[in-house]
Figure 1 (cartoon, one colour):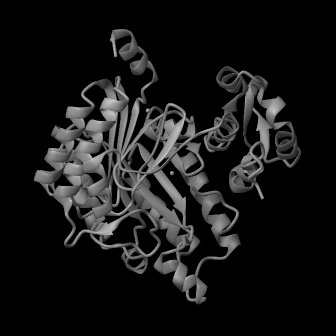
Figure 2 (spheres, helix red, strand yellow; figure 1 turned 120 degrees about the vertical axis):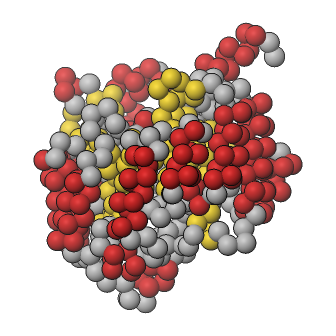
Figure 3 (cartoon, one colour; figure 1 turned 90 degrees about the vertical axis):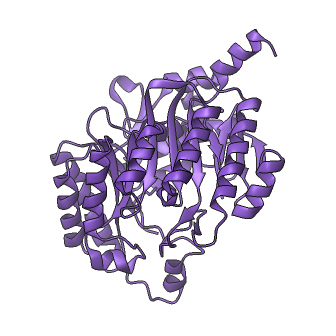
Length: 407
């Protein structure tokens, strides 16, 4: 891919301790889709003939076991991704949301409860069920505002579906909405992206995510790419697309708070900030990743294997302890995705050593290259304007620097 960076918790005393240490964020994976988009390598499966209710019951059991193992405290954010969670029927959605509330009952008053949705899969009845179940933020996968382009990337919705879905969400009482757009798509021009941004901004939403296409293995686009049948924009056009979207969003009053994310003040994705601050979170569902108490886990991916494993115990494919060195690398790498950058004092408080002592060489190299700069009052480091365009190169300097895995 090109240089532009992409883009991803005994007794009363023990219980109190667990509440302090327990994650405040939950990610839940619903792996079903109406169809597989040509660029998608997510853990998702076409809905037809899938055992959806069996999956939701297995997920309910994983929630129960997870809450027993790490008793949850107050939950600040919940994010339901996929797949397309909104392919669930209203009754299935009601069952699922009741499971979440039952096993994680203590929610912050200002909880951010996000569900991903595809336009055309959210009628008013389903959105009302979502609202009643606690969902207060919806992220719609729009990707583009040209129907022809949508068809060429495997999307089954059209622009009319987008407007209808947003209108229904408003009617259901959900005003905190985000939409995803993509750039660098096959046969997409700078002008086409400009048109999409214009139509997106006309909606006046509080949040936008705009990602560059990455051709992933095990996708139709990867097969086409290998056959030289994928007409991607050249690097100069893709750079112009990214510069254009940054300029347009800034002019419209949106802060670019992360490489691919733009928000009105106060509407940044609090759940995603959990990842970028390298904080703990529960990961539930087929193929989900979690980070609890210094351990990362990956769940079994396939629907039926997950169902069987989750009914027998925690459905782990792999679980491993994160070493101090790995945690340090993660702190820097994910933290630098946020445009406000990382704070040296936070690194010192978390690890008991200065960031300069551990990462002097890559910090000096990236500062000298003009890809990093010191934040105000020299409190930390952030990507420079140039560094935002070459984020992957910056992150690569830190991945494996301490652990020796950066070959």
